[in-house]
Length: 304
Image (cartoon, rainbow, N blue to C red):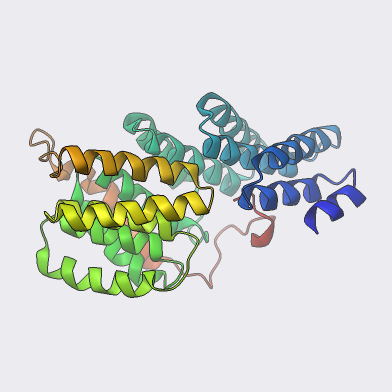
């Protein structure tokens, strides 16, 4: 339907972007690429900077899914710079957020922190994506084995964002609890996570991947391997190449080195203290029913 509408409205970049988003979510990456490039070209011809930015954001996420690092970075950088130049600071924040996610998953942690701080500076107070941004920063902490500040952030996140939208953050919370050695709460929250996973969710593959890490941190290599294999199977069925790759990598690590590496004692969790404190304070004040600087676009029209 979206593609039919886009074909009828041949000069409408908004419809081309919509077709690109829907075909990307459906796993038809070749057609999605065509639609995003069409949207970018149409928007450029009409000097429509908002749709031009959205086209680059959509194409950047697509390139990220396909593992095209240079192209993804170029699209995100373009989206961010154009959004700021046009005064759409909230959209620039989203672009920095997406770029931050991209480089974090590729273990470029210094660059990730830079983009995270930019996004934090530009996100409006009550932006709908802000709690998920905070959870993504917590993931950056967990990826570097700084579990305690991540627990602080994620405890607020799972209270502010309710199921089923909080599934991925909840699984990360369980992982952080295991890594921090908070055994009793880990066991309690793990039980809740299993209940959440009993219901179908588009993020269940990634959530299982986090749970596999959590089981490994808790010392149960067998349970970790079971969850990692489920994650890989679910990701393959959803054409989620990135999660499938991560799950397969974790399976290999568990089979060859059941226990994770010990934490780096040379860097303490205090390094993340100020950032975690600022994010926690903003999360506590965040409300989905309030608005800071209202975006120009409706939520249903955003690129992500």
